[in-house]
Length: 145
Image (cartoon, rainbow, N blue to C red):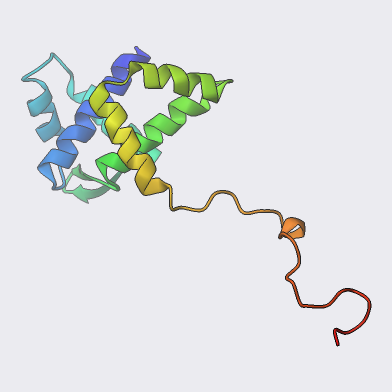
């Protein structure tokens, strides 16, 4: 059931991004019904859940709501990956298994992403370990002559 709900969330978000405009429950329902038997209330519940999670914003349009995405597909995917990774008690092992599931194209995309991310600084060093003091020319035995 949880996996099915996640798949339905993804199917709905995909449509919202593809259409690139505010959508109603009925529009999403009619499109989903071409692929599966699904109830209006199910689509309404998932759209509301995505709204509460912060992935969709909504505004009233008469008696209904119109939904639109808050962020990009890439940000949504990254958050899903981060959430999944956070559930592991051994993140390094989870990454190794994840890399093993990747296609050659996905591994190449990962290499490209790491090249882009490489210029970003890592965690800052603690203030008390700022490195060696600058060479001022003094020996510590009084002023240099």
